[in-house]
Length: 156
Image (cartoon, rainbow, N blue to C red; front, top):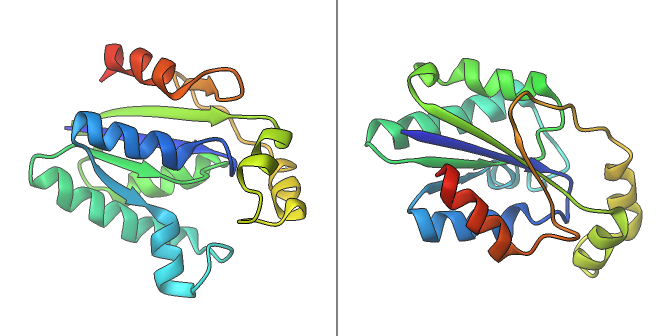
């Protein structure tokens, strides 16, 4: 089974791409923000060990039923991806595809207008996202969803 990890700052298009991939390629989706909201009532709180364990257990259940899974999260630190992978027993038996979306802070502010305060978007963009070997990177400022999906058809 395949596991896709989509990551990036707010406003880069993670949710839009996630929905498109799930629809086109029939992946099951795990949005870690939903775990946070259910547990804390907000996406601003996060306990990596517990919350990523919960996501890994959901992903394990999905792959055990012979389905592909997509995990959507900011995942700025490689350490958090490793926590997720460690909690997912048998993950090494699956194909893992890392996708990182990038966009300018100006684009993110426009995309999140009325949803997330401008100051919060700017604050998040000050956090550096650590690189991962062999990850696929798309800049959504200048790449359309259709272009991204066309490129991903070659990988998925």
